[in-house]
Length: 223
Image 1 (tube, rainbow, N blue to C red):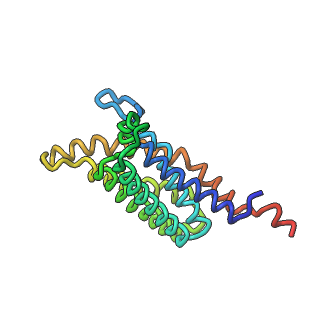
Image 2: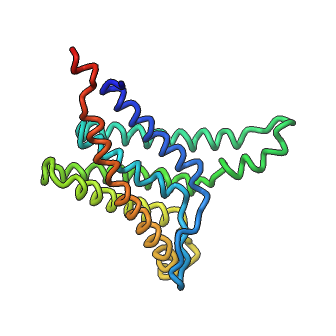
């Protein structure tokens, strides 16, 4: 059975997987609904982003805010390094054997600097806010109402993430403020709503994660 510190390592590995996968594969969008007047679409990362915030909350609940902040710093560093290396790799000339695959490679990894910057800033700020809100609520409710603390911090943090990313990535300087916000709200509100619903659906995973981390090892109980 995994020792307690190995459980934390495994959870951190899952956190890193969610971040890297979201950044590398999140460009694909899928249909998620039709309101009649508006078709709703979302990035495939919709399945992973709420999990990132939930892992923050699980670690804060069990190990405290210091460990959670350390995890956030790791996440920000990973996103920054990922895009720096992606830009470096795309800029390198291809070998003769790879020339035919170069356009596809660049299309996947050659994201624009603006999109990369928006993703980095939005992730960093929202992740910090998630830990801060969860910590404040934990001080208020103690060990009670984990579902409320988790979903409140996640839903607010994901609103911050969505607003910052969409604004930095898609605000058009050649359009009026009214035109920009009409467009931005049309993508922010449905995307945030879907992410919030995913967070609520994943609430049982937070309880399972906390219970799993706190459960003593069978091997430790024998000593």
